[in-house]
Length: 81
Image (cartoon, helix red, strand yellow):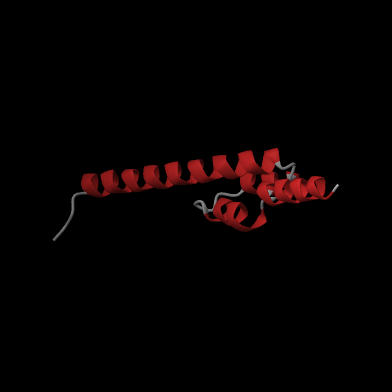
C-alpha cells in the first residue's frame, strides 16, 4: 500500500514538532537550573547541543547542585551551635 507524500509529510511535521517541544521544555528547565547554580560549563553545553532532551535530563537528575541537601546541612550546622 503506497502512502501519498502529503500524508507522510504531515506525520513527519507532527513528529518534528513534538520532538521540538520536548527538547525545548527539558532544555529550558536545565538551563534555568544550571544558571541558578552558577554552573557555566553545563549551561554552555546544554545550550549548544541538541540531544532530544537526553542531556538536559541527565543534568537535572545527576549533575545539578542539590539545593535541598545544602539547605539541610546548613540547618544542621545552625542547630549544633
